[in-house]
Structure formats: C-alpha cells, structure tokens
Image (cartoon, rainbow, N blue to C red; front, side, top):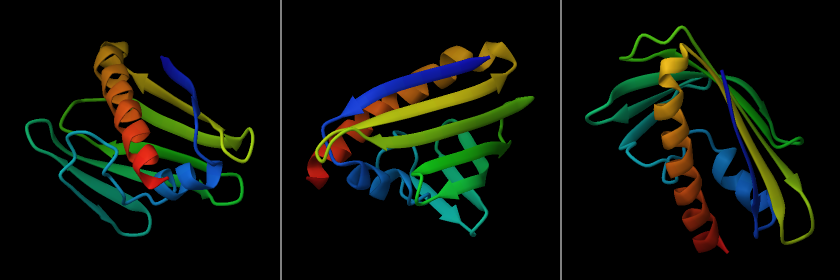
Length: 130
C-alpha cells in the first residue's frame, strides 16, 4: 500500500535538501535519539519502538531525490520503501513529495502517523534554518 504526502515549503529547495539529503541528520524525525550511517545503511535508535536499519538505495544530489528501504525492524514488515523528492518552485518555495510503500497494510496507520509527525517537525527545522 502506498502513502503519499505532497507538500509546499516556503524555503528554497536547496535549504530543504540540506536537511533531507544529509541522511544521518535526524533532528526532523520525532522519536529518533541516535543515527549511525556507514555510507550505505543508516541505523536509527527509537526508544520504546526499537531500532531500525534503512538501506539508502538512491541519493541524488542534483535531482534532490532520496530512496531508502527498511531492511531491519522490530516489527515483521514484508516490505518498506520510501521515496523523497524536492522540486524548486521559485527561489523561496519548493515542493516536497514523500511516498512510501509498505506491506502488510496493517502498518499503514502507524507509518502515516510517523510521516505526518516528521513533516510537522521538518517545517519547524526548515523555518529555523532560514
């Protein structure tokens, strides 16, 4: 099942990418207390929820595009892949698209809530970066 958020941010695309494109930066992700990145896999610590590992499949600086897959989780997920892209709309505004496919569908409410919380925090972090 696919979850999709298509949002506008009142910040330059490069500023938003500076947050999202740095894959070990987690100040915009609620609940994550620590992140380690080995160049291919980022490991996130989420007290109370467990630790997860995500493989960075694509990180394209020029296209401002990121694709990652959850490869280790305390929950028995069959599949999880997320895609993030940032598009400049003007010098001071951008479009942020975040899609995730997840199976089984029972995880959709949890993931949707997590993504929504991260988007809200991303707005705060991006506004502070101005």
